[in-house]
Amino acid sequence: MERPLLEKESLKKDMAETEGARRASGVSADGAKGTPDPEVAEKPKRRRFSAEYRLRIVREADSCKEPGEIGALLRREGLYSSLLTAWRRQRDAGALAGLRSKKRGPKANVVDPQVKRLERDVARLKRQLEQAETIIGIQKKIAGILGIPLRTSERDEKD
Image (cartoon, rainbow, N blue to C red; front, side, top):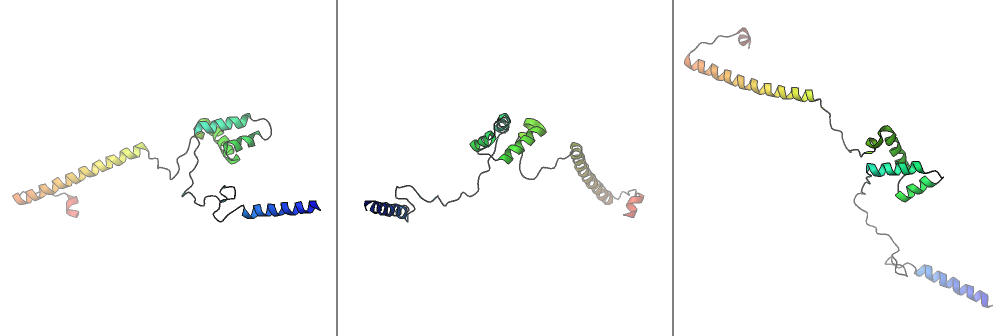
């Protein structure tokens, strides 16, 4: 008879603990906070790994011989297996150079140095032409004022 009474009491005690475990404030009966902070960061920060770190992880993964060692390494470092695969490809493609961080965003247009030089020459020649046309215009006005006849070429007559 004593046994069923003990079971009922322990059952009541368990129910009381679970019911009172969380309060409206979100703090449990033992003082620990029950709900996580609802505030979310504005934008998660992208993780960046240095070339040396990537190379070290790839070497460690290559040295793993036992089953499950690579998984343990990835869990310890907080990495995904896809990162390890990508880093191995990069290493095989160009060793450490392939592991360097790549700049994100649109790529800059690579312009041939000869094209740049030619563009500068064209701009310089345009300035010289404008200056020469201004001088010729002034000479024509002075010749008209002084009454000096100018020779006209066939091109000037057509214009």
